[in-house]
Length: 241
Image 1 (cartoon, rainbow, N blue to C red):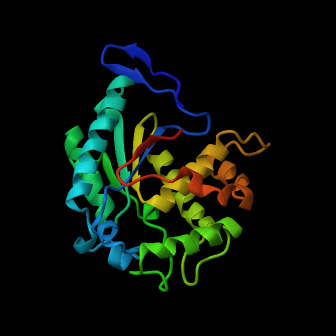
Image 2 (tube, rainbow, N blue to C red):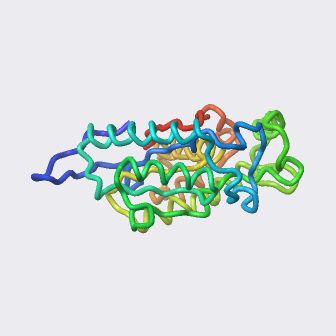
């Protein structure tokens, strides 16, 4: 989806980006986690940050492979490591994934190139779904398709997640320019993120040139209800815009 990098001098690479974004973006769903292995929904901050729910051994391997694939993507596009930023959800399974990827890239996880962003956290599905079986996801997604502005009881709607993802993107765009951004997050937030960016990049309405305005313009049921089309597997890496 990207135009090629343009060499501007020895050891330098200028990255061309989408007209409404100052950075290039890749998304990575966390590797297979202990909740994935157990078939449990873990979506609250309280539970999500527990070490009990970090990556399973298979998930560590997936994160390692994703890091190697991302490293190859960077090399193929002549992107320097100094221009890479890893932005990740505070949940244990995502921070664990981000740490593995940073290690592959030889980036210090506690350094300025790795940033935890609370708004990239898992979608909270509500207390009636928390720690329940993965089988109940189908109920939520059926509700999303019918009306993405309706919240599961006590939880977040698709539209709610769009609001905080917009905030996360505005934060990233304000802090970094001309960087390769790896967003490490969760299944629902990442498919919702891809949905809004895919719609926003083609939106041409008047007065919607800035990022937040573009996203607001495409924050409509016909767009948001389709987020499952952008579903990722655990440990799957995609380039977005």
